[in-house]
Length: 78
Ligand SMILES: Nc1ncnc2c1ncn2[C@@H]1O[C@H](COP(=O)(O)OP(=O)(O)OP(=O)(O)O)[C@@H](O)[C@H]1O
Ligand SMILES: [Mg+2]
Image 1 (cartoon, helix red, strand yellow):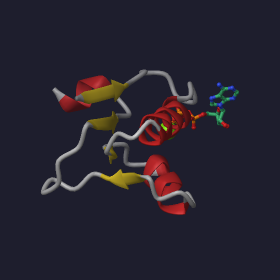
Image 2: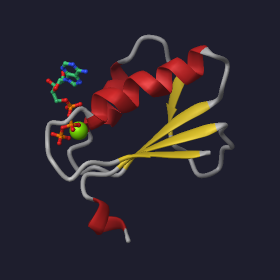
Image 3: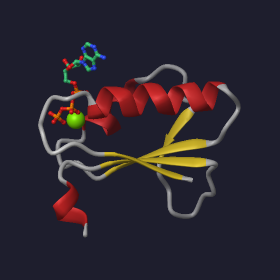
């Protein structure tokens, strides 16, 4: 399952919601990763700094129940 959180406007909570939802699913026992396609890299920074280590940074060689994709602009990924 891929879950995309995207909003063309800045500062609308994309990164925050991604990190929190990813952790909620991981707490529920799912194998979860975040694929950070935002050049700011804020989600990556949060995942790296998070103590729980329950959410991975996406690795193409691994299988996940859910992958949260962070994009900074929908048009940039068509
Ligand atoms: N539900 C919320 N309630 C209050 N503040 C929030 C909420 N979600 C996010 N914020 C705050 O709003 C600010 C912007 O959030 P965030 O960085 O997640 O947005 P973003 O859409 O990823 O921004 P950017 O466009 O810069 O990537 C942050 O300071 C964050 O702590
Ligand atoms: Mg962000």
